[in-house]
Image (cartoon, rainbow, N blue to C red; front, side):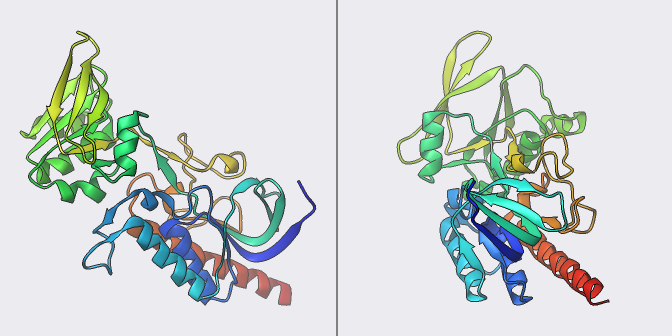
Length: 319
């Protein structure tokens, strides 16, 4: 690492709705925030075509454009938005140290973590190609289910999240195929009961996805029965993956309290972590809602908490 260092009052790690909202509030509070956008500038919404459920966009907006709007709003209040990613941290002292791109060290009086989470995918070429083309592959039924009203869709997964999203889709879609790799659910009994009593959900146990069919949009899915080794095709127009998310928090392990998956644990009702001056917002801490609007709300909380924390420090110094 080089000897290049810089001190800032408020450092924001990661962009997306949480990071940009935190930046807007922090900048308006004269915290002079510096933001490093991370490995995926704009976060998960840059992989989303249409966003119809964020307030203020009556005609909807595509994800990348929404992130560009948020970035411009943050910069309007003089947020210093930079390319780069946090490669290491040292939270041992009252002044927090963050290494950027493995070479530059930032010291900060407060840090807001907005690194988000990444959806897990099956890894099929067809799945990723159609996902990137906005062709009907999604990891968020609540976000995108509306676009498949009265259509046939499939969802992959056997846990509580998959079961919850399948029942959500069932309210909108004509038919929901639930593709479960094992011969039983991993979901709770309550969620299984909900699935079983929903008439337009068909569960395909012992099935795995071989290929998502379609050139520019999803037309179907080819499945393999892992017991009989037989394959079959199912006609669908939407393909949802619900096999989990991984929070982007690895560099904070050993410093911040986390659950067994890696989500940062915040103090209830706040954005505070177990280390004074370190705050968390968005999907890095939220494994329940995972929506742009809730991420933005926690970004606001983190900035307000950081402002109060810094004011208390300044008051203590003056005394």
